[in-house]
Length: 221
View 1: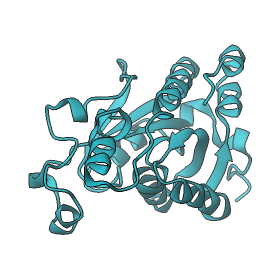
View 2: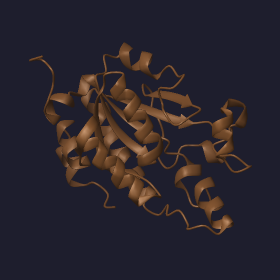
View 3: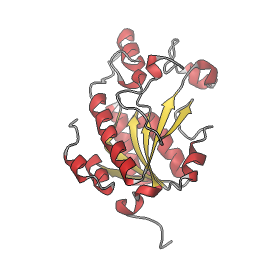
View 4: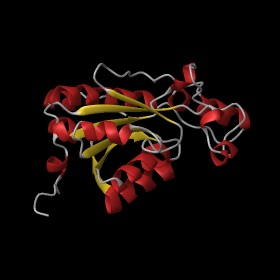
């Protein structure tokens, strides 16, 4: 019990930490991507994607610092071709689907994996569900997940909850996650604070990764 990390600094020990980058893909993040396009075409309230470029750039800075510190950088990529989805998931999708294999929509948005990063494809909201993510993180001795990406209240939330149930310490980079649903975004951050882990700024995380200069030059949201 005495060896359990309890402070943010104790949890974010680089060699036992994975920076998780969730679904930073064109269909979720870009102008003309699935979410922005289908909402506009349906006449529903539009999804705002204008903040995603700054979020991606912040994640890119965090990823560079994490690599230099010896932390793992792990990317989750949604592939939502109907052949992979459960009927319940298909029932919630519009007819054309999103993040289809081999399409621009499934490509990463603004930032890309580097050699040595972990890249895992998933077919539902949790990055751990029926994927090899847990085994790959365990091979690297990972104990803490620092969550970034989109959407805060959907795939980020599903993955961090699943990770918590598997025994990982959870940290969310509050300015490194985003959602077109502001209420859902704030709800996830509030729930994490109470039940699942820590909320930290990118600047705090960069300093824990030993990159003070990068912390002082983060892109503004």
